[in-house]
Structure formats: C-alpha cells, structure tokens
Image (cartoon, rainbow, N blue to C red):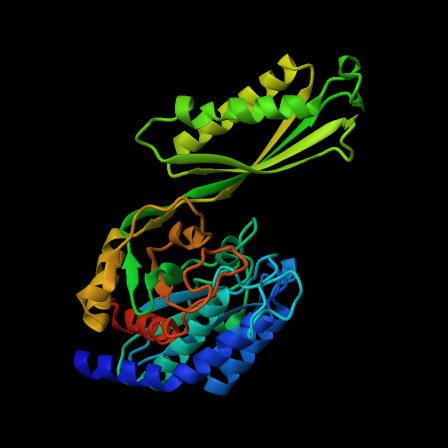
Length: 412
C-alpha cells in the first residue's frame, strides 16, 4: 500500500501541476494586504467548490479577513486528523517589472504566500483524488494575516481552527484542539527547486516590535544651545542599544536587535521636537527576551534623559519562537526522504526570522519545513521581502505532493 499511495500521490500531483501554477499566477497578480484577503479567500473557496471539498468561511472576519478551514476524509476518517496550513497575505512592496508582476500598485507576494496557498490547493486536489488509499482526516487551513501582529494564526487558534468540526460549523471561541499535528511549508530561494529542508526543535525566532519616541525641544539648527535635540539623542540611543545583546544576553543565546526606521524632522535647518525609532527584537528564550526588553527600556530612557530629552518605549510582544516537535519532524523528514530521496532532503540552520505558525505549535505538535524554490530564472535566488523575489515554479509540484504525502502517511 505505501508504494501504491506514493505512486498515486505523485501521479495526482503531476496531473494537477498546471492547475497549481494557474492558482499561483492568479494569486500573485492579485495580492491583498494582511487581514484584507477577501478576494483571495473567495478564490480559494471557489477552487474548493470545484473539487467538492467541504469548508467553512468567516475565519478572522472580525479583522476584515476571509480565512477558510476545509477538510478531506480518507478511509476510516476517525483514525487520525492532521492539519495543513498556508498563509495568504502579501507585503507592501512594489514589484519589479516582469510579465507576471503584481497588478496592485505597491503590493506584491514577496514572501511566497501565493505559492503556499497554491500548493495547499494542489495538495487538496491530490488528497481528494487519492482519499480511498489513505486513512484519517486532513484539515486544510487557509490563514490570513501572517505578516502583521497579532498574526492570523493566533486568531485562527482562538476561533477553533484546530477543532474537529471547524470545517463545517465555522469559527467560534475556545474549541478544544482535535488534530494530532499540524504541518506548514514555506518557500526558500536558497534551496534548489525539488529540495526540502527540516530542522527539529527551535528553528525560527520570537519577534517583538519596538517603537521608541524621543521627545525634545525643537528650534533653529543654528541655535542648538536653545534646544534639546531629539535627533542627537536618538543617535546616542541607537548606539547605546547596541550593547543590549552584547552585554545583557548570555552569549550562547541567539538574539538580534535591529532598528530599521528613523522618523523625524522636516527640514535640514530645523531641529524637530520629536524623533521616532522603529525596530525589532529577535530571541528564542522567554527569560532572555524579558531581560532584553527591560534593558532596552532602561538604556533608552536613561540615555535620553542624559541628553536633556525624554524617551517613551513601546514593545509589542510578537510571535513566539517556531519550535518544531522532534517526533513529528523526524517522521516528516523520513517521509520526505522516502518520497524525494535522501539527496533532496537537507538539514536547516537556525533562522532569526519569525513566523506566526508558532501559535499552532503552542497547542498541538507542529512541523514547519522549507520548500526549495531556487533556480536560474530572474529573482529565483533573490531574498524574501525584496522587490525582485520570485520562485522557480517547478517547485510547486514538489510542494503540493509533499504536503499531501506528509498528511496522508502520518500515523495516528
């Protein structure tokens, strides 16, 4: 039976390749912001209708989103219930010109969520076509709002997306999780198309959002002695905060503090009243994060005071760290080797990027792995969250068959 199922999944994925590519192209052309994925959700719903798959809508509707939970029953549907997840939102980035570029000015799928959704739709088709060959039930989660807090995953969990009846009754509150595990897939341009990567245990960092407002006393640039310059204070604060990790963090604990945005002033010869700093803190350990947050507040406030200014620090605690369940991840890696061959399955290093998939992992065992999308085409090696980013679409077949294979073969 395992060989029969593997061959059937491969054949079904091959036959669905053209459709999966069409899904990806449509979603890529029509990106939508986080928690505004109404058209994308409608597109997914229509595709599920065409496949005859049961689903519910209205997930994250309080945020204006259109999340969907579906399910497919194999033989003996009560034996197990696994979940597969894809995110649907885009980023505020203007894509470079190319034939299949985004048609929405200032927005593009620069993180591969179009591919994630297309692959899950492809996996749905594969599972539907082969459901007589595998046991259990597979839950399909099409999630909005991965890119911004509070993270669509946190809302999907709260509304009961992991509950047994989620695909029929729709969102509610505080349902008991029923699935035995959840699997997520993310594109990775540094791996060749047709390759996948796994890491057991801690994989991606927790991500906090930081905003520091420095209040001073503005005035004429030629008369700085009559001001309390928040620009100079900001420079000292940024410099001082470079010691947060180097002198407040255990050297064996990975951590990153970066400020990517400075806002303040409107003319070269005017000292403004206020400057705003926006940054991010990445950690893996809860106690480390708590200590570093306290250090950021202490250093920012005292440095501003020393410069005659005042600092207000707002730290929004972000997504938890992605920690892959060792047992589930080991099984998924082995199954990937069976499907693709050992040479196409690699081990992944730690990453300091964040992902709200971690919210699912807080309540059920989860495995978050990488799908290689690298190739020789333009943008196929470009980094995520860049205007040049693109994927080698040969990876879509691998992505669809891998998700279907992992869900169908996971043992209860």
